[in-house]
Image (cartoon, rainbow, N blue to C red; front, side, top):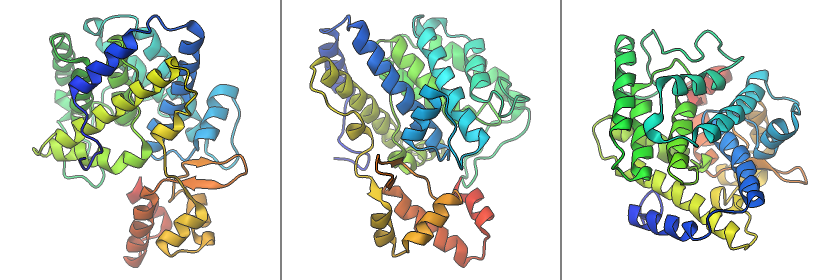
Length: 333
């Protein structure tokens, strides 16, 4: 075991990919079902990592049925529909090779992610200096961004010999380190990572929302000159879980993939007990956007990830420093 879970190797990943290859070509109905599930799950998790409060079930309602969810902002709805559209573009682009990836493809993915949210900056490299909130990481000067991105794309083209999962993980890391856009960098980086995986016959990787702090911490540690092992292991684990989902599906085992991606959710009472807060306080902080719902059961019970325990402690810490709720929300986002 490691801090990031079981130590999965590239050899393990290749072995599972080979096992999956025995079943190819997959039946069209199975492919369609898996694509539909991943469309919602990737949209839900990628947006939730950035603070979107739509639950998985709400995300499905928005993406699959075009419904609106009461109490949620227009931006949160757009983030869901935009990401789903971008994933469909990724599916189309996955029919080409990684060596055919162009700058226009990345810019178009970003334009789709921010459509209707920030049309001025959608599909445009940033022209202003940027800092990552709460992080000491220094980002490149905006003047350098176009050249850095051209070099980045050339590097991808020249890296055909790399293992596809290694290439996808490194591309994601380099992209977020360049931080080419004013907003939407994380979502676009994950779309790009999954495009590379899918172009090479691998299923997309899901970064679980419960792994958010490991994910951010692993990236930051590497960006500050430390080991990249934690970040790489997290990505390997994500690809490994997705391969398991495919292998279970082709074997007809009827497993609920959600169990593999988002286990151990807490009901509101469990979160309240773990944090010594009242249910009313947890509900209020959720309504104010300080706490993020992971899901809602069919019976209407709100479910939270265990990492909300640490978030509650952080809220109390900031309150003790006399920050307002709006200020606290800004520091948590």
